[in-house]
Length: 207
Image (cartoon, rainbow, N blue to C red; front, side, top):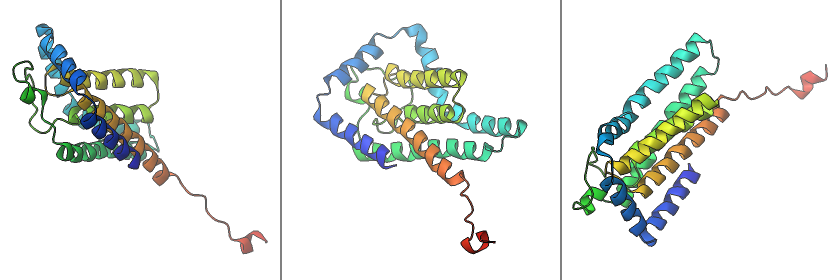
């Protein structure tokens, strides 16, 4: 948790101190030079975040029960904890930074193509996607899980810039928050579910 907060604070300082021209130029370029045939696909990708968050824990539970996995409770707890932590950190950071959306600051050059009503930094969709994807990768560290999960999360992040509702730095911060939340939840659950060896009484061991 401390690592996540430190990383977010560093990004906030960098966001306020460093010049924002590259950030602005990139969202204007990606949004302004988009392929209109991809608009619908990008909306579908960005809207897939919520369904995936709801379906994945059900899939983990069903798979665990079907295979008699003794660690299904740990896996499910790690995933849910990852998403919940990412949501808390992301929402609290939004209220702290209060950054406007790019389509609000530059309505003449950035077109809003998706929902985006709250503050911009960090990207909530991206943090949710990366918390979900990273949690899955830690739970099932197989290439056929890691590759599609991280590709999907990356596309969700890109779609937020493409659709004009986030700056690239919002997406970067969201990815950091999401991934950091997954690692934090994974290690917390690992310690919680690890069985401690029973202490043997010295007096009993003498017999």
